[in-house]
Amino acid sequence: MKHISGKDFDVMIGDLLVHVESATLNITDERTTVKTGGVPNGYVDGDVSAEGEIELDTTNFLIVNEAAKNAGSWKGLPPFDVNFTAAGSETKMNVEAFGCLLKISDLLNIDPNGKEKKKHKLPYVVTDKNFVNINGVPYLAPAEIEDIV
Image (cartoon, rainbow, N blue to C red; front, side, top):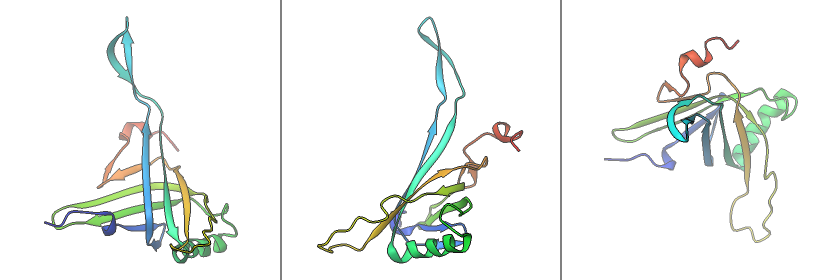
């Protein structure tokens, strides 16, 4: 049986297919325990957020740079949906992050020894109420987003 590895993921940033050197997506869920007299007694909902980072080589970075050029600037890029998909012989993984606002870090980090190809990091934050879906299952409950315009 072939298991999923990082090599198996295709990454779409909006409608751009890019090869990533690495990628992360982290969810922060601030639900917390309520205590009565110092003893756990249920929980309350809290804020949620998601963010990550996509690391690209220069060839793939320039694909996104072309989209920024078409938008007028990097800050002019509208939020993108990012889709991470992979398949093994018996398993599939599809993670969607909605409304990802891209930023740039590590634009240049030059190593004069030249042992590796140049990489660029694009941190992002999830800004859309649809938040994150995992294999089609939303992270947020429908009631949490139904009144958000």
